[in-house]
Image 1: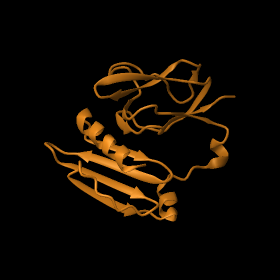
Image 2: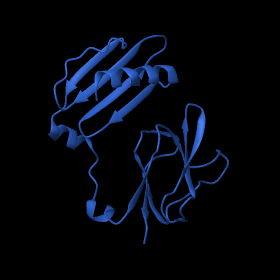
Image 3: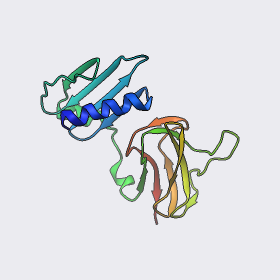
Length: 163
C-alpha cells in the first residue's frame, strides 16, 4: 500500500465518523483510530521496513512484524473439517447483527438450510443497515461472530456445508 492510499484511507475514516478501522492483508496490518476532535492515531504493521511520516495523522507508529509472528496471530483452523465448508464473509466493515431487530428471531441458526439469495445477517455501516445474502445453498454449520460485534471487510461470518 502506498503513502497516498494510506493518506486517502485516513481522510475517509476521519470523515466517516468511525472511531476505529482495521485493514489486514498478508503483507501488512493497518489500524486507524480517530479520537474526539482532530486527534488521530495510525498504527501500521508491515513485513518490509517502512519509514514514512503521514502528515495528515496526528501520530503514526510504524512497526515491523516478523512472518512467524503474523502467522501466530491468525487463528488456527482445523483445516480437515473446514475444507468441506464454504465461508460466508463480510462484504463491508461495520457491526454484525444476526436479527432484523432485537425482538425478532435470528435470520439463521446453526443447522438451518439456506438458499442462494437468503438474508443471513445485517451489517450496520455508517448508520445504514446492509443485508448480507447467501451466495450458496446449504446447511449453516457454524456462526463465527457474536451478535452486535464489529466486523472487518472479508472477515468470515458463517460456515456453510453445501452438500
